[in-house]
Length: 266
Image (cartoon, rainbow, N blue to C red; front, side, top):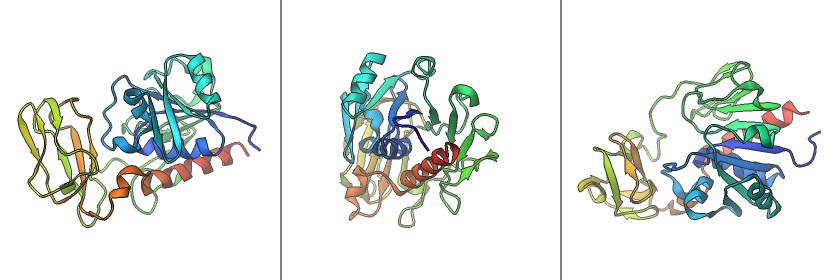
């Protein structure tokens, strides 16, 4: 049986991580999210890490809140909210001593995870070897094995191909053609026509590759590098609500995480 109020530290507050954060919080875990100082979220409306910019952020009934100290973290837990703390190197781990540590950065490589940092360590997606870098890896690649628990070996390598929506894959994603500061014209939830200008990067326009709803858009006035993903478009104009709710992919992965936790501590 799981003892009450196990502490879970989740690295990353992006859209995939947020499915796991939401589910674990709702199940009664004390969840702490670690982020970098200025994260670039594309699907900003479904990322608990947005609390870094907004101070508080609500997604599907769960509120995340920016924290600056251990005292802050404990106070936020007392408010039944999820603390977000800037700590990319996980220095707070030695003080918090979590029962579970989850790497949900989705960086496709290991950025400092070690198996012995917690009683249970979990890596989401490629970049980790189960049994070596972490105890367990969760498959994040869409398809038959999405959400599968891997106790030995690795997840599938990153394909670099976005998930297909209504027949569109890589065609629905917009990348910055140059380096500079982005000025957003059409933010998340906006309906756009194909070839419509949706943003500028230092005066150079970015155009919608197809007609649909802006599902993800990087924060206005962010500095972006050439080739960085800055926007994705959903061709299904009737799916506006999807811009503001946790995705099927994130929910499936979170289910694998929960199963892994309960299986490990049984």
